[in-house]
Each structure stands twice: as structure tokens, then as C-alpha cells.
Length: 219
Image (cartoon, rainbow, N blue to C red):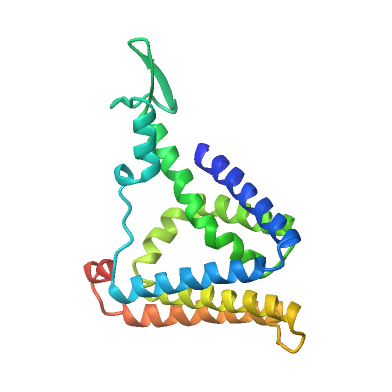
């Protein structure tokens, strides 16, 4: 509950900042597009290198910062994030988990919010899509966790989608300065995204059809 509420609040802040940037900065779409293109390149390099996405909570900067600011008890106290031990206010391991969730969501919001703005400029729709995605992810986590072991090409598909939306945002910015620069329609964008996800799913299932579970995990 803490993670979802905190993620929604952080997404709301990022969406509001994005809307303010679009209203006041003429190069906002160019900036958003550059962020997505850089993220796509990083994701593609990681996929080609075969790097597994593993996060160690103890090494996260936000967690280390909390440990520096206040002591952390080794005992869990249910859903309580802070307790008082020996007259000193201390954080619990649950507080570290919540802090890690918040920090991770900030990283995701850096590219996910500009990506949604590449489809629609309505802040309400942007927030609604993010909210439904977060709420749905909690319910579908265990289903998706099992499916991801077979979607070995998903990284390529996500990189292609982020790169495509990045190009779309750059073209949208350029069209505002030079009318002869073409724009990519929203329906075409949705069609490309659905097609990429479909192709990636089919190629992944074909590639892992005869692979044992251990080989899938390594991919």
C-alpha cells in the first residue's frame, strides 16, 4: 500500500512537472525525446550484452542515505516504518523497502512519463494511464514474473518502442519550428507499438520453445 500510494504521488509530481515544461519550454518535446532515445540505447546495449537486471537494495543510494540519516533496526515490526528503541527513533527494514520502491519508481518515471506524453498531451490521461498501470501491475506481478522468463526478446522490443516514441517527440518538436517536418499520427504510433509487442512476443515464444527453464532464466 505504501509503495503504490507513494508511486502515485511521485508520478503525479513528475506528470505535473512535465505538463509545466510543455507549457513553458519550447524545447520540452526535444528534451523528452532525447531522454527516451538515450534510455532506448542503454536498454539495447544491456540486452545485447546479456546483462541480467538485478537490483540489490542494500547498495541503492537512497537506502544508504537513509542509513546515514538514522539508525536502522534489524527486526521487522510489521507494517511500521519507524519505531523507538532505547529512546532513539529508528527505521525498520520495512522503511528501507519503501525507500527502495520510491527510488525505483523515480527511475521508471524518468522515461515512462515522457513516453506517455508522446502519445497524449492531456495530463489527466497521462496520470490515469500511470495509475491503472501501477494498480494492475500489483495484481499481475506473479503472472508477469513467470511470463518474463519466456519473453527473452522483450528488451529489444522495449528499446524499439522507446526509440520510436523518442523519434516521434523529436519530430513533433521540429514540426513546430519547421512546418515541412512530418509528424507521426497517434493512431499510427499505437499501431507500431502493438505490432512491435506482438512480434517480440512471437519471436520470444519461438526462441524458447525447446529451451529448458534454466536456459530461459539466463536469457
